[in-house]
Image 1 (tube, rainbow, N blue to C red):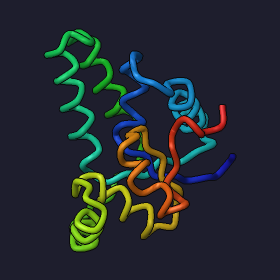
Image 2: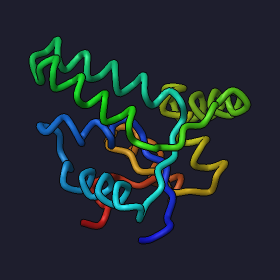
Image 3: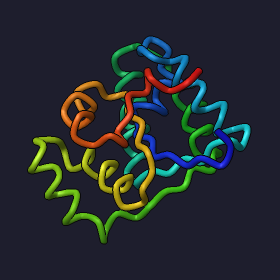
Image 4: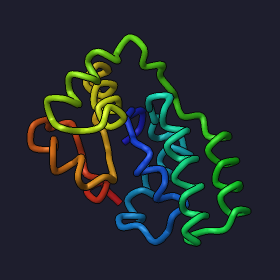
Length: 146
């Protein structure tokens, strides 16, 4: 798996810290492969906001405490994940969102992966079920090799 690049969405990265999620072993393997330099991760710039917001909601819902969330945010900041500005891809994201009845946020990941020609891993089962059979490069995180 060396020198491979994939797009990941926030749902994959959140599994690194929200341990009550499913497919955490596969998400952990993505993290390990990334931290060992065997895998490069690419994502839209909205990735960080989605993660921080979800961590905030996890604190509000007593899934994790604030100190743990802040530690996760520090990890996120330290990780050298390549972020892409999506301004030029907004029209395509809008079109995909409309076509497949997904959020523009979800479509941003799809458009980025499609444009760059990389596989896209998601931990969002509804997103995967909506487009996984249409786009073969959309992968369920539970299928990532451990």
